[in-house]
Each structure stands twice: as C-alpha cells, then as structure tokens.
Length: 86
Image 1 (cartoon, one colour):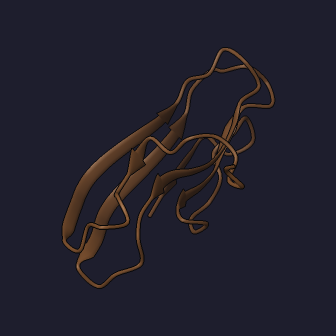
Image 2 (image 1 turned 135 degrees about the vertical axis):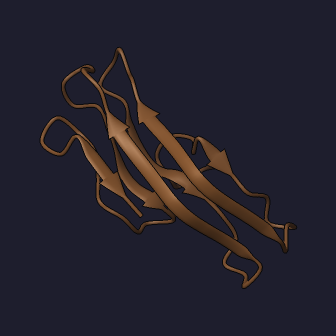
Image 3 (image 1 turned 120 degrees about the horizontal axis):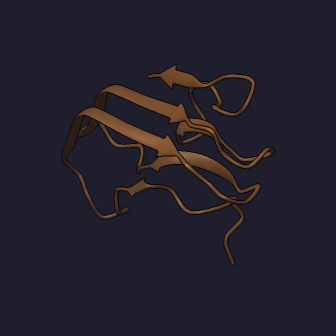
C-alpha cells in the first residue's frame, strides 16, 4: 500500500544508479481537487541528478496542487503559488 499521496509524473526506479534530468517541466492541470505529493520521485543515490526543474499550476480545480518538486523538497504549486523551481 502506498503511503505517498498520488503518483509522481516522473519516477526513477529504485534500481537505477545513474540518471541526469535537466530542463524538466511538470504541470498541474487537474479537473478535480487532486493533491500530488511529489512531481518527481527518485532513489537517493549520487548518480541520480536533476537541474532546472519547474512545476506550474494552471487554472485547475480549487484544492488541486503538487506539494513538492522532488522527494519532499521544493515549494508547492497550487492556487496560491502558481510556479516553483528546483
């Protein structure tokens, strides 16, 4: 059973030891009050890196949003904060 709310837009598998994500954009465009915990979920290993990641909330259902950019880090996007970078 998942303890994290929602499903990440990008999920790097736990067996991955090398991944370089650059210039990624994850957009919140929900018709219902969906709350996503993380835009990106990744294993915490030295070879997995991200640069220049942005999340954006568009005109969505009130109460929808993304709480964090990567694994609990980074600002939320919702009707009060339309965009965040990591």
